[in-house]
Image (tube, rainbow, N blue to C red):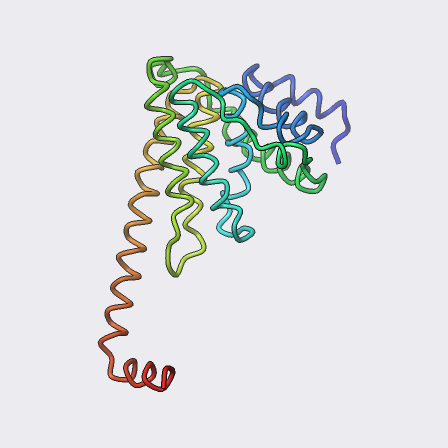
Length: 222
């Protein structure tokens, strides 16, 4: 088990921008929701990335992905046009449960250990202020792909969550390749949603054409 001194040492070895993300996560674990999400678009971006980390696993609590998807859509649009989205007071006064905060910090630690050594400021055009509207709208679209209901799947949140993490953290640390990876993942997430809906429609048509289906429906509504 690592001691506090070991944790401080490992934190100091991270690039400055990634240290800011870790410190933000520490503050978020102790603050109210309104203070954690923040009022500035940049702070809200970091919150989106942290909140999406647990959804990188192909399972989760029902309803969480949908709520986060719609909230990401709103915050992404706000970032695109340069304004922070106000948080309702009833939600803003709540605090993140300690267990949830510990899980979030654990996910962040795993992510940073794997990504931070390979990440550095580069491809600055992707994090240039002129790209803010496009970056915000792509992030908003990633949120919509996460919120979209799809049939017969429980793993559909992984791609949009990865896109949200790459875009938000990429902008935070000015790693253009990470942002670009988020663009690619957003396109893949949209294609996955379309594929799942097409598959669901094909299954529905096949079932509706079966003789036993009409008999079962007739028995059900008789």
